[in-house]
Amino acid sequence: MTHSPSGIHAPPSPVPPPPRRRSSRGRRWAVVVACLVVLGLIAWPVMVHYEIPPFTDKGDPVSYGKVEQPEQGKNKSGGTPARPVDSKVLMPTGPAADFKNARTLDDGTHVSLVTLDGKKSGFKGKVWVWAPKEYTDDPKYAKSGFPVMIALPGGPGYGTNYWWAGFNFQENMAKWYKEGKVKPFLLAMPVLNPGPDDKGIYWDGSDIPGQPKMGTWLTEDVPDLMRANFRTLKSRDGWAFMGSSTGGFAGLKAVLKHPDKFKAVIANGPDIVPDSPLWNGHEKEKAENNPEVLAKRLIDTKGPDVYLSFQVGTRESNKHTLPDVRKFIETYGKGPVHTDLKVIEGGRHDGATYAPNLGDGPLQWISEQIEGPTPSS
Image (cartoon, rainbow, N blue to C red):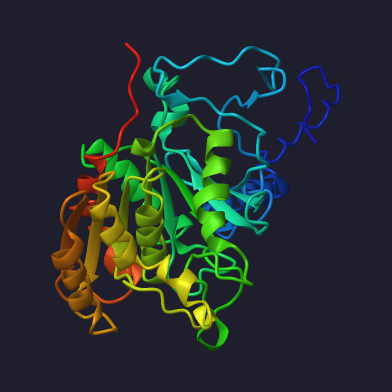
């Protein structure tokens, strides 16, 4: 004990408190939060990629703009629809379809899906659609009509259509447009067949007696869907087909059978004549869906002009595909039947062969024949 000079006992000197330390609990929480942030940054793209809710907009409603209601002459918001700048343009006629998002591209555009109840064919099936940014976001095209391409798959063509999510088709279409190679097409991608191709059964994209009317579905109902919901062109100059294998046949036949409605087609590795076993016993109807018969008739009647672009690989699974296409071009590629052929060296009978080659030749060639869109001044 210490003593003060006066002899009075002084209180003991206070013991200094230990230095304050950062709470160990606080450190733990900081580590937890940091780990969660890192895990979130890693998991976010994974959950988006695998469409794990709520990290996806798949299934959300998709709108492509105002749709005119023919009864009232007004759009859904109650206003009068914008009128086109050009008499060639057909504004959306309605009714509006219930489009749901199937895929979102990096540029923000959507591939959407609708189940279409075909009023003319009586067939009900899926259709995927895509509109480029020029349609949805570019003010100078706000009143313009856009060309439509109906893209058909090969293979079963039932329940799905590989063009909506395969081969980066929409991404490439956007890129090719920016490069000045192609028109900014609206894409309609319907199912091709009403059922699986079990035991070699397929429908040739045609109205085969006693079967679902797939020809009417492709050439009437699907175009009606596009006219109802998009700014399109009134004349055939804004309408084209594209397809692979049996889808290529269906598109080729559609343009030759309905040259008043469609102007051009890209046929990738197509059959040239109808060959579904479902035609048995219906030879007259089969002939009416034969591109050779239809091309000859078009030549004899002197038009209207159609533009048929073919893509064929040198390693097609059917060794007759390239010779058959060359023979068709040699025989019928004259007068109003204009033809173009791209031979893909080493190419096989599949979409992976055809898709990347579309922008360098076939799509450029038919884009030169197709109208629209016309920008406003």
